[in-house]
Amino acid sequence: MVVRNPHLARLPGSYLFSEIGQRVATLRKARPDAPLIRLSIGDTTEPLPPSVAAHMGERAQAMASQAGYVGYGPERGMEPLRQLLSSAVYQGRIAPDELFVSDGAKCDIGRLQLLFDPSCSVAVQDPAYPAYVDTSLVAGRKVVYWPCTPENGFFPDLDTVEPAPLIFFCSPANPTGAAATRDQLQRLVEYAHAHRSIILYDSAYAPFVRDSQTPRSIFEIDGARQVALEIGSFSKLAGFTGVRLGWTAIPRELSFADGSPLATDWSRIITTFFNGASCLSQWGGVACLQPDGLQAIDQLATYYLSNAALLRAPLEAAGLSVYGGRQAPYLWVHTPGRDSWELFAHLLHTAHLVVVPGAGFGPSGRNFLRLSAFGTRPSMEEAAHRLAAATI
Ligand code: PGU
Image 1 (cartoon, rainbow, N blue to C red):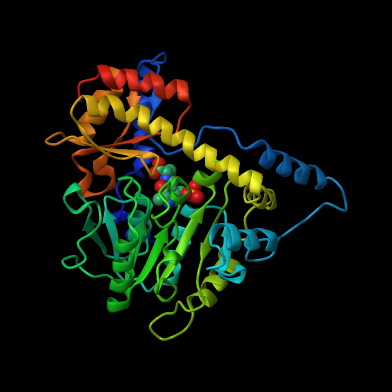
Image 2: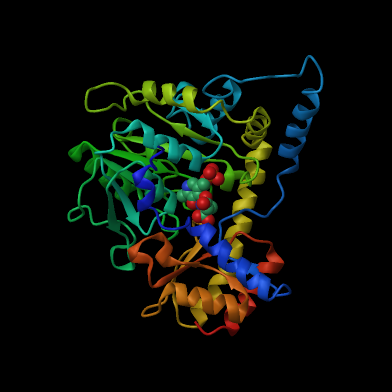
């Protein structure tokens, strides 16, 4: 007799973006010609920088020769990539041997659940990226919501929130687009020290930070190395959503309550559950972190932020409060008194725009919509026209 993992029953019927995909598919069936524009899943659209594609192509060609062929790679990822992450992304704050290369942030978010006892509850920003909640539920954890609203500047009120041993924290945040300030992150780190919590910091949107005062990594904060790990991704950094590449940084000071280092168990987990990211993706990552690659990927972030400005204008002209979009590729639109799934359906059927209902990110999102600025410029211009004509 095979018994289902009972925690699976705690999950919502479908993953948020699958649910949206199903609703869009239903419309497509009824109206195959509907000119849909997706402002929904945060998926990159712009081509890879040529230097990155060329480097991956050369390595792929070399695999066809005896001299260039490679098999399984080093367990923690290629040395040149870890060296570059250490220098270009962390300015030496994280050493190459504290980095573990992965096939993407979401995969690591799932695997990280294996490190901690199920009795450890987890706190999430409310609203939050649904993978934090769903993977925690499958791991059997209690999830505690820390409201992040316009009233508190989308930063949790640490004096009143229910403490939890684990804290998922994303900045710039999905879906609110809020980028936490140095002072806010310093308070979070102090909170983690005081409560002996561990922060699972997601920096997937760090490439969109434009203000030199806004931290791009939790490790820019004093005291973070004892209480935080960081999950990073090339998806939004370089348009690698399809190529797949990410990493997790675990400082050697970070330990469990019994004093044993997290990094030792993480190494054990990834060597057991994972055989490394594709070598071709890793060579692509190396090319991204060269000076010309870094310049090209920064231009990609600027491009998407210009899209965000295009989408913002008609919404503000309609009198709506629009958050995010300045240091993140998402707009978080306040629609007081309106149910977000109803508005989703309204925009889908009347304007053929696919947005994400805020309720899908947590209870505090129910009167919001998330609009993604990942898209080609012409499609974003057309979306802005339709938003100007829509009644929201
Ligand atoms: N972390 C955050 C905060 C994200 O928003 C996303 C993608 C990821 C990690 C995934 O990174 P990978 O390195 O590509 O695994 N969020 C998108 C895509 C939806 C999804 O389910 O991943 C979004 O639209 O929210």
